[in-house]
View 1 (cartoon, rainbow over the protein chains, first blue to last red):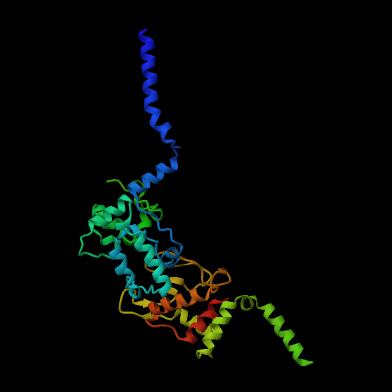
View 2 (view 1 turned 45 degrees about the horizontal axis):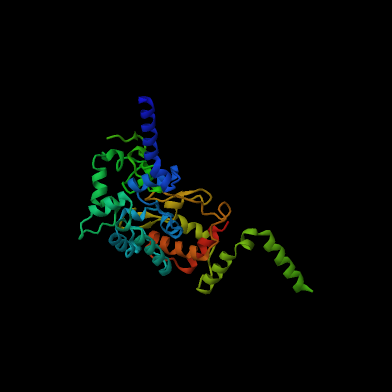
Length: 187
Length: 134
């Protein structure tokens, strides 16, 4: 008699626990979990073809979610001297690239890391280098110079994908870091 | 009798030179540059300009086209600052090159300004095209 009661209790408990899953009609997919993980730890990848072509020809196409709108606006208004390079665009392309950057900028993104970039920047501060944002500096402050600026295979903090192997997909997790000549980074 | 013969020979000769016959973009651009005064352009002049070193008083004080594209047009280049790989310039190994007028003009503008500190003249651009289109 006791056994029957216990079994009944187990069955009821299981049924109760699985009820929300059955009810919600949700087909669990691993892809969704990846998407969730990405949103909670990464930034959106740069997916615009015009942006890829115009900016990604010379350097990694940095995700728009790495800088807030004010920064992108400042950067786009000075393309004739773009960190020492000439990166002028015709009016139509300029408009298209600017629209893409602004509508996906860090302050408008729901990706967790983008929000951290955005929140770290004070109102009167408009950095145009991602590596000059407080959040970037905080995240890289333990890395010795010899691994980056003094490393001929990296040279600069601007070269995200030299160490962040999944940078172009917007993923900057620590376990994806491989510093050329040094290997994994573990702090 | 002589004129049809000449036309025939002309047609044959364009067939023999596929680079010239296939690349309408280059032909159109060369015509434009000619109308702007590029009357003495040549591949030899293009090659010389490609390797010529220009001085700048900011970062990378010695600049030439070869700084990023190398002196071998059939080999890939590398952006001097970002290290990003650049596909070969010669249209013989990279048919994508010199096939889009807008693109050619865009890169002339950007890269002449970086390398020489000014825009290229029509003659210089025509010489570069003749040098690269092989």
